[in-house]
Image 1 (tube, helix red, strand yellow):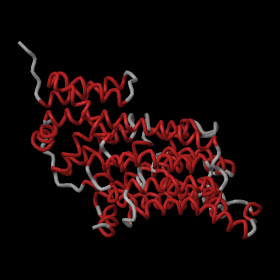
Image 2 (tube, one colour):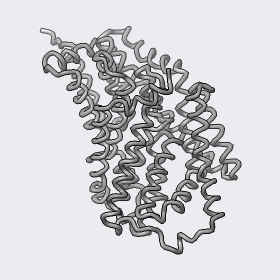
Image 3 (spheres, rainbow, N blue to C red):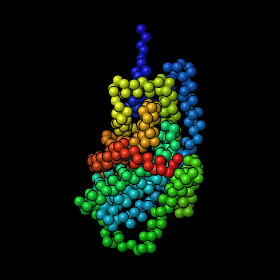
Image 4 (cartoon, rainbow, N blue to C red):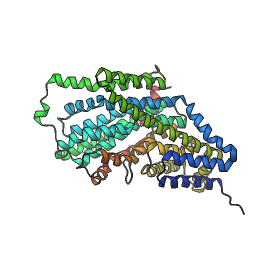
Length: 443
């Protein structure tokens, strides 16, 4: 007697197969694409093989995909040329005299780096290799500053030009401008909460973040203002990119091109556009862009199989019918699953794996897709710092000074994860925190 499976059973089998392949060490795009292509062939025969081909063509026809390598290139040029480092020197001088001032300056630096790059990896690299050694050298509490750098670097996936939000916008068919603006309020709120935590900790225990010595504070006024001007340059680049797009002067792709061009010109004017800088920036851009492209192609193939099965409706019936969950209950289950998956996967892999299932379900329940994109992004931030396999935990261990042990890194993230969980709950209860800017500035 032939074995038959329900649509729910087939969907579960696909996810289990994908998880099993990932446990073998196969790359995410390989596991997703292989399961999608094989399932299509088994379910629909010869005609099913066209699904993989169509997914590739669909991706190549997505004109906004051009923005990804351009934004990534902009971030790496600013990072590799040292222009981003000027920001830290500025904060070092201007914020250092305050108790915990270097840690506060580091948070602001992370926000600025986020706005330049749109990815967390650049902020983590600069924070752990430049800011962290400076703070440790001046007697800052190593666990506090480790948590500051890890938490601050995650803001990169919320601030424009967030690459993750560009991908979410493409998959969910939502305007990127709305998503970018919706991420600004929550990102600034999280940054303010982190700064408040630093201020309170250093007020209660000044030894955790001592102010700069009198010798270091005695810098001529002219030198301080030169540092201020140098630090403002990367911020002007960010304004030129996001400002042109949000005011309607340029399209998303044109804004990305403006950012790539202006950042290259800035590096050249500062005489830092060396052959080595350009080579590293281009190699890193190619590597990151290819990774995104492969993952997206695999995700589109997998998504097409799900759509063909009607698995979204089946899962919706399970959540709302058999389990009797309310729409808010379903939303909370989704966010919890993001947190669990984030312990093992990066943000892009999480998005493309669950997008075929969650995005149509969220839309059918009547939730705002832009608001849900912000909630998804915050859960990614939390998952980045959550043991056992949080992405930022191992990035920090690889880049941090030797005196910072893995145990220190694990213990450093607790207060910052709590801050982000509080932020997540606040945005769920008060959607206006995220939606005020897009509702006010955009039609």
